[in-house]
Image 1 (tube, rainbow, N blue to C red):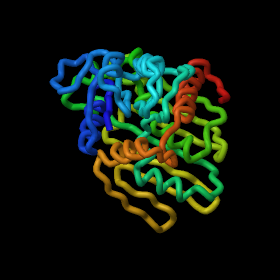
Image 2: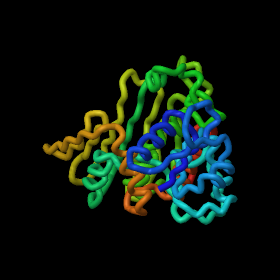
Image 3: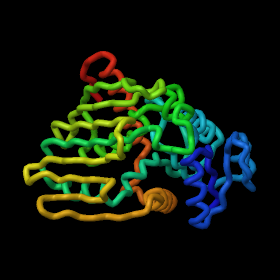
Length: 303
């Protein structure tokens, strides 16, 4: 398989390494001065000269739409995986002839997410609450946090976009959002111009009360979910690797690359049972836009 990775930041480097480990031939599109045997500065040139079977778009969020449009306009007909979030805002997808295309919400492939989803699948869900937080300067200690895309709103930074895994898997588990309200923005001492805290409250198809709380500020990484049902509460802790239902706790231990690796394998073989579709990815974008609107206008926004 000839794979092309667009963008060579931390996530692009991870995709390239994993695809190489899986035995595929790798090429890059990057403006960085990196040493790589097959590298182009231009996506158009890479498509013409490398002719990939699989393209991974891992550029900055605000560049995703242009990269996907270039891919679509070239007549590319292979498989595409686009890093989350799909775009920096809700925009119509360009017409394309891709054989398959997905959004890289790899947390769907985490055993904790899947165990949580199975545990509540047939239960009457009354309320669901997700929380995620971690201090931004600790994310990439080797880099000045003020220079990363997370800190820069125009590049697609901010917790609503950075931590939108929670929006995706809550939609996936709860049947999709119907209406929401939200509060958030930049309220901390962090030297950034993007949002550092957001709380979203919404009604979902399969749950009348749901919340997602996210921030760049927590002293220690926390990623937790509690779903209250008629049969008790199911709790998930991604950091501890546990899902608790009643007196029973399941324990999971996986290394960090696993979810990314199995996501690639699913995309390449066309197993769409877990993968995030373009439409599901667009639903998350509409949710992000609605949360920003609700926060600015102090209102409820319908899907």
